[in-house]
Length: 246
Image (cartoon, rainbow, N blue to C red; front, side, top):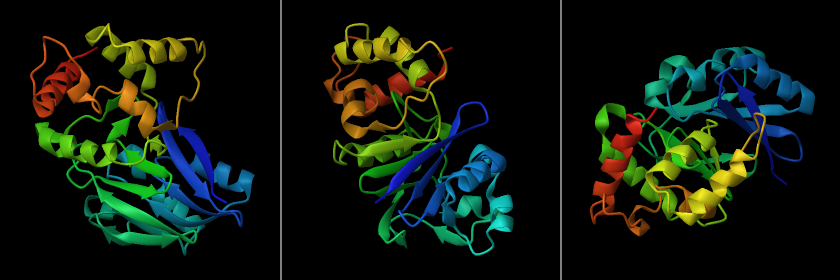
């Protein structure tokens, strides 16, 4: 039986740890060492591998210390992250056998050129590509890359549990609510999230939920005179507006 653990680090980052009943585990995007190490000790876990989505420091800063503590650990990730301790380079399309399961490696560029995501039914570890209610910033305005990466997610089963690397849900919904004040699903979910008075984890989400409340996953269904007919044009327009949203 698989068990999903979440570790809050830095200001708004999450590290995900997936473990089997025998306590063997896989760590996704350890951007800080100590909170992750404490969780490993607390749960008596046995790290077997680290999966890295991209090279930004808030996703890789804890790798070398984890390697020091667990010398046999395998570290998988894109070539852009190789200087941070990656010992198994991936490009997308591979299948990795870990925890007696198959992890599918998905090439999802956009936030960075080499960004990868990892899918093991029913979990999707999507780094900074997909957030609840939004999507990641786009490297050098490569909108088509991000657009196509999100398309790969939209065809996954609705029950897919998405595990992004940041807590941006409320901010994303605030933006969407202002841009689309008549979108019932967005308003209702924003109101639900807004009832949380103190900082609280809103993740994981699901593909099914995101198709309802994430404007970047249901572009073709949004009807607004501000938007064009084509989903890609809508994507560029909304992402550009979001880039300048404070």
